[in-house]
Length: 187
Image 1 (cartoon, one colour):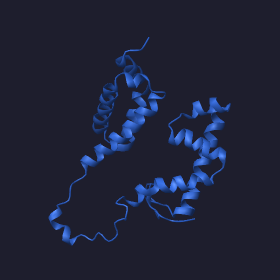
Image 2 (cartoon, one colour; image 1 turned 90 degrees about the vertical axis):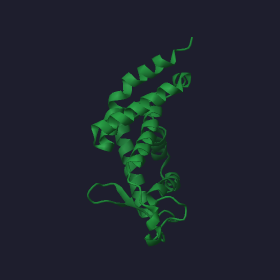
Image 3 (cartoon, helix red, strand yellow; image 1 turned 180 degrees about the vertical axis):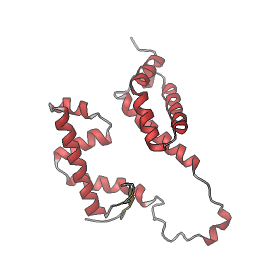
Image 4 (cartoon, helix red, strand yellow; image 1 turned 30 degrees about the vertical axis):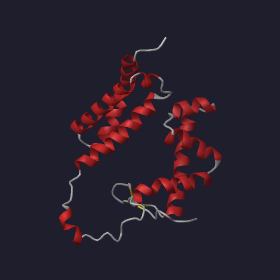
């Protein structure tokens, strides 16, 4: 017997709405904008219909959709430059790939993951790339939750060090966010 799509979405929504809201407010700093994005995520989940009920990890799906919806929302909010003044703009620093250097960080991460230990790679791929919760990872690996959290923290630190070393990643002193890196650094 299949579950009605509306029931699957509302159940997942009840379980994850508050954490999604906190995530979006943390990203946007504006409650009303977070609510707009949250509403869009809910509508996208409803549009999935029965396919939503068949998801292995509805939480990961909701977060992935929230992130992409957030990016779309932010892009819509950015002011658009007048292209008539393009002759005064210097495009010589634009990356050859058409992507900003910080957007190229994914390639650097993929180059550095194989350099990490198998344990570090496994927890980073499961929790950070595939959206598995630390609790679920701990249970699957027979670890205590605190041990899994420590392992994930250490693995992230080692990845961060590898990115700094191999891709010349730099962080903004005020926010701690990635500000720039060398996109095509060989190692």
